[in-house]
Length: 410
Ligand SMILES: Cc1cc2nc3c(=O)[nH]c(=O)nc-3n(C[C@H](O)[C@H](O)[C@H](O)COP(=O)(O)OP(=O)(O)OC[C@H]3O[C@@H](n4cnc5c(N)ncnc54)[C@H](O)[C@@H]3O)c2cc1C
Image 1 (cartoon, rainbow, N blue to C red):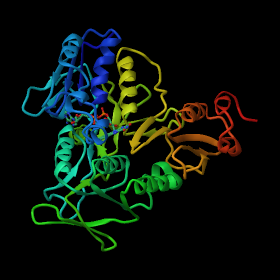
Image 2 (tube, helix red, strand yellow):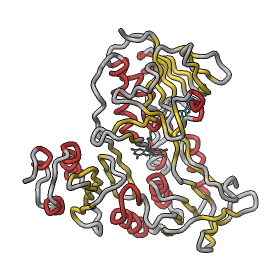
Image 3 (cartoon, rainbow, N blue to C red):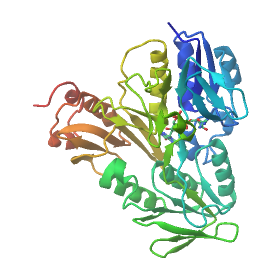
Image 4 (cartoon, protein in one colour):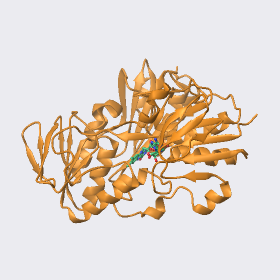
């Protein structure tokens, strides 16, 4: 039997798509979407790319138009912050409003940006980027600024650096690891990212920390761990995120590392599900618990949770996937691999088109493709199939990867 009332907390891509998927699958009970932001739900990935570059405007980011909301018959409560749940009465506690009763609850509250705890981090001119309002403020500052320092060379840091550079600013990136995204893409692809940024005129200071941001009221310069002083008009802090679950810590369902869910994305409270950035779910390949902070995963979770809420027993089986756009390069990544025992490069990381395979015991656990959508498509099936593949074949750009995703390479 379908639940009578489904409440979704978090009006980002995961929460919004859950509502849409419920209706698409024929659910006609009550759906209430609770979100703490004041803006209508919008798409986040363009914030560091086309929106920051001024190529997209706020109206281009809207996920669902007011007419569509009306026709979906979903009650959207923006500006409502959930501050807890009462599992006994099955209600979400909302700051300043009546509790919202649920039969089933979907938690989709995404991530908070990690703050940088150094002197000067709260000066005027220091930005971080998570929301439309953050992006609007940064875009505005970039109009009048000439120099920017980006602290952290993860995906957001790299994208922001590229966008600001494309706007004509002088940009320096300071990253404490030896290469950008070291733990995700490894040394070879990380060095490629350094070269890519340098080729476009970005100063890349890797293996370097930031010890202080200085200025009188407004930021004036950034001091690095090597003692260098970088004069700047603005600073963007992009040092990672953590799950937005402070509001659920007391419930016992969540901890600092997420909400653990099963293959139906259901938490240990059978009435509560979790999706997107907050969900610690079984990796479809290794079955170990992972948390993935990417758009496509939140969307795939949403479609799955809608089916699970309506009674499907199908286990979640979609490979994690993400993309990123940096200058003229599109990166695509499928799978999940934090520890590999071999990296195999197909093509050359000196070019702007290649793939990197992250292998464990002769099987491809994850693949990163740079401007190689065709290789990526086929390599993805290799990750799904988990068949052993010889290094020589992965390296050989003339070998068609399609055949190895289906049958074992003997
Ligand atoms: C600038 C930027 C660029 C990105 N680019 C890419 C990209 O190129 N590719 C990619 O794969 N991924 C990208 N991502 C990551 C991707 O956007 C996220 O993984 C995705 O949005 C996660 O979806 P979600 O629904 O879990 O959470 P979110 O989209 O973060 O939505 C969560 C919502 O819940 C709200 N919320 C939080 N706490 C509460 C509360 N207590 N009560 C009510 N509401 C609450 C939040 O304010 C937010 O509106 C990017 C992220 C950012 C910030």
